Amino acid sequence: MSGHTVYTLSEVSRHKSKSDCWLVIDGRVLNVTKFLEEHPGGEEVLLESAGKDATKEFNDIGHSKSAQNLLLKYQIGVLQGHTLKNNEQVGSTEEPKKKEMSAFVIKDDLTPKYAAVVEFAAPLLVAGSYFCYRYLTLSS
Image (cartoon, rainbow, N blue to C red; front, side):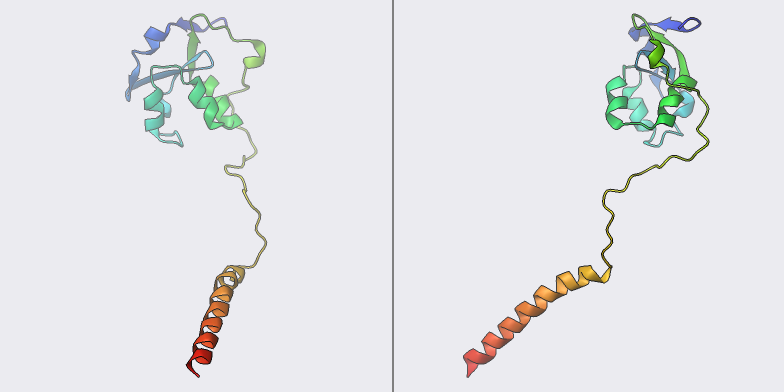
């Protein structure tokens, strides 16, 4: 932790504009002004949390390892009263060489595409046939 400037939350709260945007995540004071345009969720997300402790919002999203590593890149200090433990070190600020998966598969559907049409059309055909039969048998 040595070498990091210590900031109070009131000092951080003065930096909440698009031209000067700071926030706190896990006791780390981050200057994310240069990251606003690059943020995948849009700059509005960061500006809503600017000048505040955004730890809960950051953890609720479930960020990737490379997103967590960016914390160190934008860290300018620590929040007063917060001590970083050794196991809180996220890792290097280098981007990982391997490409991470940006989404996950919810369902691996192996059914053919025409199956959806058959599932929709078959009941209609059966119902139509029944009503035609009923109409023809009642008419006689």
